[in-house]
Amino acid sequence: MTGKEAGGPRIDRRLSLAISPSGRLRLVGSPDEEPLEPKPAEAIAAAFARGSADGLFHLGAVEVSTRLPPTLAFFRDFARLFVSRLCAIGDIEDRRDHVEVPCPPGELERLAGEVPPVAGAEYVDGARLQAWWADLEEFFRGEARRHRGSIQAYLQAKNPIWNLVGRVYFHLAENKQDGDHPFAFLATYTTRLSGQARPQHLPLGQALRTFAGDRPALLSLLAPVDRAAAQSRFLKDLVDAGEIFQPLAWTPREAHGFLKDLPAFEAAGVMVRVPDWWKADRPRRLEVSITVGDKPPSALGLDALLDFSVALTLDGETITEREWREILAGRNFRNVPVAASGSVSPYWRSPVYCTRWT
Image (tube, rainbow, N blue to C red; front, side, top):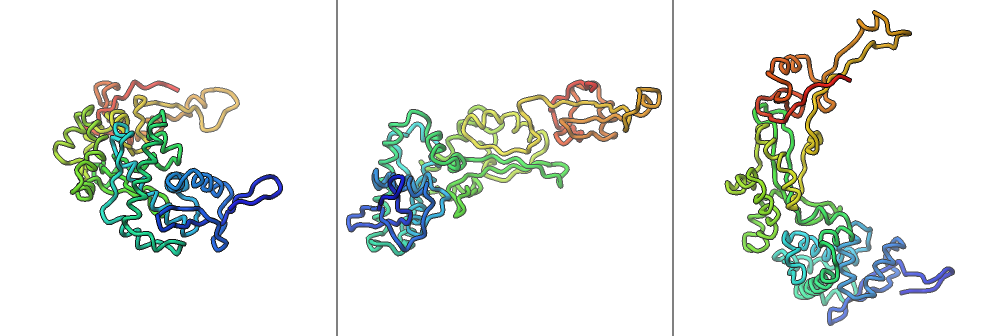
């Protein structure tokens, strides 16, 4: 598989896999395959030189979106499924040395029917794939024992995409068409990557059906939600009522209750997606800016002093004259309830600080 050329050893970039009757995987050169890019070809060759399980794990964890020939792509899809299910173990840090990675029922049998033309394809069936799956489990347990950091950091070092897979997500979006409930909430989870190597989201309620016969897997997936609910009364109420598994329409008050607890959600390992305007790290600030003169005069005289405009903004968004009057009608600036969009809402409780002149 290797040759010599000026400057050092050359890695054969036309690669395939061959399968022995005992199920051993061997990386071989194949003149019929399209050549790989030099860097992935070298990395794949080095991984399989260390062992079949090492090579498989490298295909699934690192070469997530690399353009591969059909044979390598098939084994990459198999190993990528393993890594996806590995990511779905919510309490993996507690089980890292003895982790067992569940496989979706029937998935290996389906994959066995899709083996591309390859030397030894006749030896591949569901049982053989299950044996390779067990090899991957054993390989990963060894990796986890040697790795001193978190498993999340280990997988992210392989490919950043794994930070997004196997996670529960909370999504908060604006729904400006509904004046009474202008926010929408949905919890999702990601179980695998698509063919384009993008995380596939499913409603969290789907997990109740997908893992109906596998309670440990369901509890593992929901472990970050359980940790977050222990720190957030708002979330605990959603969980206790079963509403966490449903799409919800929220009032501004409910949305603000959710936004206040974002740090607890993220610390527990839940991924959160919220509108860009939310800045939890600083208070919302109402500001007044005055521009003296549309055009700079030669000197600051009476004309210039009479030619000025006032603009009121909330975090950079202009407040209308009507909204400004409503704010002035309030008892004091500090407690004026202002919605995130800049419109006044009797439900929003975000503090607005005294104006400052600029």
